[in-house]
Image (spheres, helix red, strand yellow):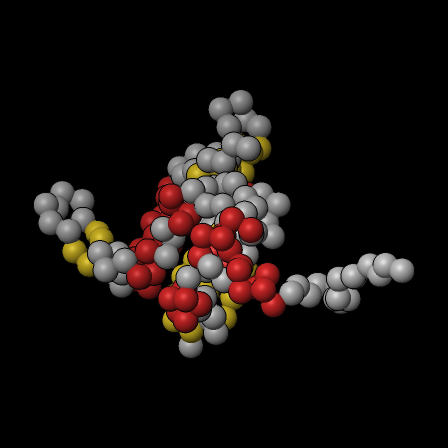
Length: 200
């Protein structure tokens, strides 16, 4: 009478100890995992851990062009640490163009201007203005232009209630809500030339 030797029973997902020892060998382990999985990670990488571990992740949108790529903004204690493409975004699926990848520099670039640069009419030098002062100057000039260029009727005598003294050109990063409010504002001020540079 002959007996067949059977392999020891193993639970699904477990492997013999010899197999695991063999897998720990660098070249063999990588070959068995097709270069993927835990064996592809060096001990130094395991000790270093993820560079975004412990950071707060906030989903955002890239501020540059009109494509609207999704970003994940990582912060620590309110300070910006890193910006990456959002893999959950159906638009860019985790990728970013070079400008989007460098959008962190909008805040942390040492050469970024933080004052309004202004050169007076006929002037030869630039001067720094606070944002509040610059906004007041823009508002004053807008009102003056509206009053000076207001038309009740056109040259045919038709009532138009408009001004051709200024126009508005919107940026590509404006969302639908912002565009709606801007259109309402400029139309209420009598502007006719209202445009947006985005063309998608």
